[in-house]
Each structure stands twice: as structure tokens, then as C-alpha cells.
Length: 73
Image (cartoon, rainbow, N blue to C red; front, side):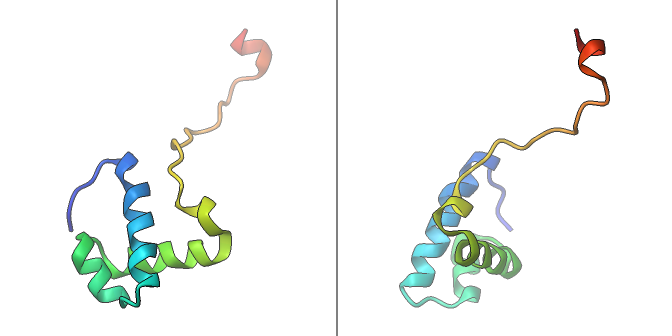
């Protein structure tokens, strides 16, 4: 499996959907992009459920703070 930066995955998700719409099967898509078939399957599933917004890159959120707002001030 190829190594990609987190921010590059949006482009990969979009390419995955493009290839799917062109009639490619999941195995060849995974092989062409250097990803697992499971990743391709999950990406396409999210796209079908959520549409184009599922493909957008989002900055990962951290763990929620345990401090109260008073403690943060």
C-alpha cells in the first residue's frame, strides 16, 4: 500500500469515485491507486450515503478538552 499525506486523500477519494463512475471495479481501482480494496469500498459507500461532502478533507479533530472554560481562562 502506498503512503500518502492526509491532505492527499481528498484527491484520492475523488479519483476513486471518478473511476467507479467510469465502470471500474473496486479491485482494479484499489490497485491503480495503491490502496486497499476495503478503503475503496468504504470511500464509495460514504459517497453514496453523503454525496460530495464525504470526499472533502477535514482536519482531524483532537481529543475533547477535559478542562472547564474557567480552567482554560
